[in-house]
Length: 258
Image (cartoon, rainbow, N blue to C red; front, top):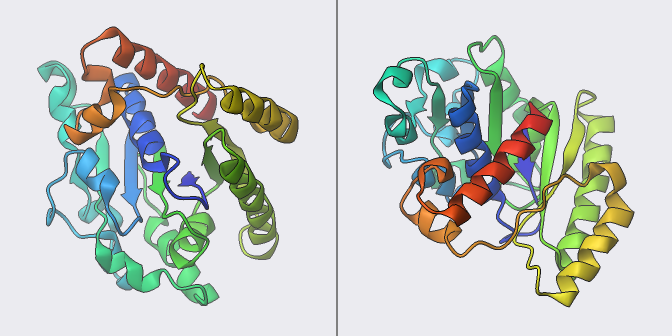
């Protein structure tokens, strides 16, 4: 499942991490592939820079490499009770700036198949999340070609709504031409504010535009979220009622996706 947006700053990586936290809590065996050259998912999932083989190198060696030999266990597993750690699976293919060499607008079809080649025959996971960069260049196309679904992330703002519309059209075109297995999982609305008339208006607009693709619950703006990510913590293990409410929202979203 590719987690995508063609507009930056909407919290795409935050949603990836929230779903990974919910999956770990629920016992869903998960692999996170960080294709964003900024590698924020890698840092947030408590993976040290330099650990494992980065995604860009694996894409270069797609015909020779075995993904399962190069993944790194997320440090989040250590937050589980000791008796649960042995069975828990939350692995990461680390991101790095090296991936940017593939983020070209003119990427060739054979290069788009590199991640799909890497994942062929891989077993042991219930869910694979690919954190994509906020563009429709090479890395996003590589992710989409390997995915069965795209989860879109949007904010309740004019530019984000327009960007999501563009992304939906792009998915349909890409699926028709390169990836017939690809479908839209839905749209997650992030950073909504209950006290904003503009957000309320845009949410109603999204309901009209996306209909059954709009996923609930909407993720509300949360003052603790940035602090949780900065500490490289799973939201399910952060203390406080606000964190618990956010964790429950990700639990509900995960149940709809898996």
